[in-house]
Amino acid sequence: MNDYQATFKLIDADNDGLISAEELVRLMEVLGQPITVERAQAAIAQLDQDGDGLINAEELGAYLS
Image (cartoon, rainbow, N blue to C red; front, side, top):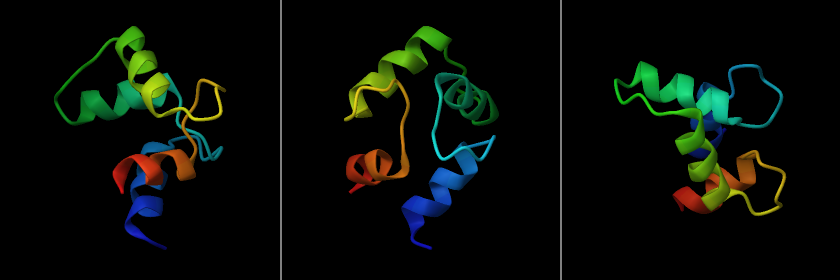
């Protein structure tokens, strides 16, 4: 497992293979940097290459590399 996959698994709380806005909000709260769902959706839109409104492991890896 590479670093991107490990990071992805930590964020993907429901283990469905996708990161939702709600999961991103939860992560940011844990990190002490709370954001709104709208802000999370905007962040996801920047990484979302297939237009499904979610981030998959490949999209996160492309962003982090």
